[in-house]
Image (tube, rainbow, N blue to C red; front, side, top):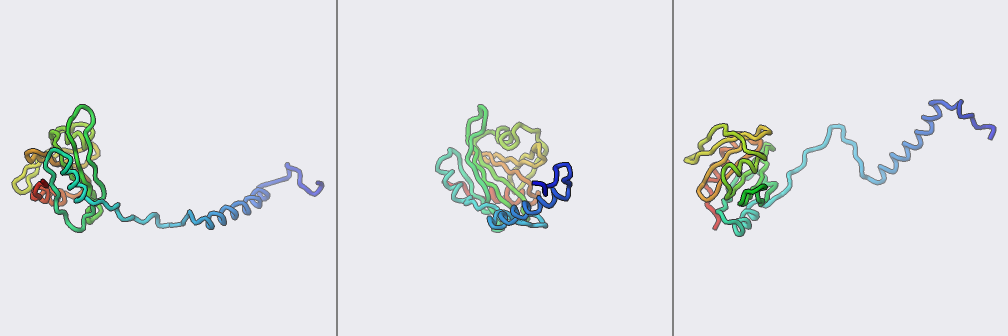
Length: 188
């Protein structure tokens, strides 16, 4: 066709005029599909997942060989996760844990196990860490360790069971959960 420009005479203006209808078509199809949104302020934090900690721990009490405690945590703490697990390697035993999101959106995990204190610490950190200190809540002594990610790990030996606390929560929240755990009667 003689009216067509030779390729050498085409410039950026021609490229832009070609791209405008293509971009408009993409935007139209995207809007019709409803799969995209524009939020200049970033995502809104959602609610934590729901997890029935009491039911999970009651069930765990029927399948593990150690006493399970169900702490009566604050109503503004939300249970969001839980697992019954067996530690890796040659360690024998079971660890059951429940995670909570506190009122100020911090995380605190409570574990119970029949494994040794060293194995429980290794379960939470991936490898044994050096003891960092101690804490006493009520009449119970807790050994404090520090995970590689900087989070504290509190461990107490309550006879037939070792209890661990870890997470990003404040010291006051660790103490609150420690007190609730020790006060809880084991489920039979």
